[in-house]
Image: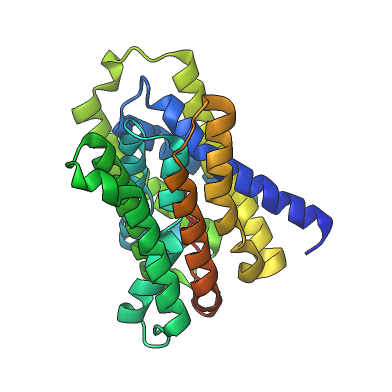
Length: 304
């Protein structure tokens, strides 16, 4: 990895970490389903233009639209909506920390749904550390009752689980060009969230501020479209092992942006949970990276 590629990796981590900030600002006046639809629709349009510029055609993969819809559901529509709703009730930095559970869930699911990615003692320790991080964050609050703050945290955990399921299912598309897969699943997510946005959110009746609208535009243009482009650029040049380092950056940059621009001050338990989750990721990383390389799983690592 040369200096330029390393800087791009840092930029990618900063962009994906900022996605939680953009969501927090957007959801002030834009409801969750509409945020999810706006994010995926605009990003899908941009990636489609890039796709055609590179001479690729979605029509050549028309037989995979069912798979694109499933990935759009579990890698877009559901987690994007859950995280957006959650950030009505919890800080963006806290959401970024909980979202970092995705690779741990992926390793756990891989044990049950793959033949060659079974758990070993290091992976088990890593997963246990991750779940200990969840208990540190959510456990004390649960004892006081399931308020919206706790449910918001659980919603982000559910989103991370959805991302992990998408990673496993994404194995079916290992022979599809990554940009085609990304564009297809974003279109699928947009199609799934469109009716929900219109029926539940009735966006034409909203009083949307320019700040929220700008945050949604940044979320779509930077946190989704540009992030995908940078991710696949790095994937082709430095490999999945090096690109996977961005997983460590996401919760850190998410906390950084929330503190810098939103004035969020997380409890000490959040930082303890962050340390436990990052330690868990480090514990399973060899197995997770091997899974990514051998199966060429290409999904957005937690953003988002």
